[in-house]
Image (cartoon, rainbow, N blue to C red):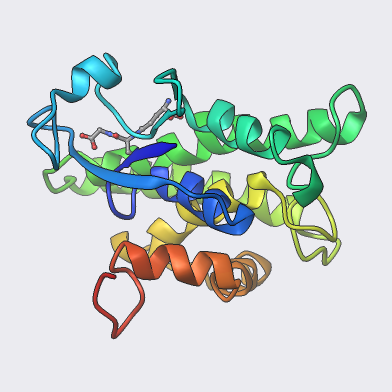
Length: 209
Ligand SMILES: N[C@@H](CCC(=O)N[C@@H](CS)C(=O)NCC(=O)O)C(=O)O
């Protein structure tokens, strides 16, 4: 398998899951602006949508969209139990959190990554929207659970962690939501997460592997 990624981007969640699974994979960085991979391949031929992640399977098939990739990895490695079985409510819960993370939380960060500073009004609107969505995560963790579905780490935690962790990059303070801050810190300590962060040069004080 080959994972197309940008360091620290949402593709990191796929890397965390591949690492958690102990899967063998190649990692290829993409310059999405230039549309080129680090081996100078035309990325649009891999993923015409132009963004990461994309997962290329050994037969050349390409799968895109974070929630699809994460569930595919979990479902093809059932022994790792990174997703509840299909057709039970817990699986729908997993999808509920994956969809929320992709379409609500992830997109609430988008204004901060547009490449130009936000003016005061835009900044306030973006902060309010993001606070609302982080509050939704706090609500999901309100019963003191360790992971977003309960007591076990799932692919939803990999994606939720990666997106919430952008708070540090944009200077968005999570202390208003102590359970969310503790959740991010807890997931960050997981060996697979540390290994994936290290591989992308994101472990404080350490260079990229
Ligand atoms: N709907 C896509 C969104 C993926 C996405 O937003 N990828 C971002 C990085 S997190 C990206 O590649 N953006 C283009 C860029 O940064 O130039 C998914 O869920 O996989």
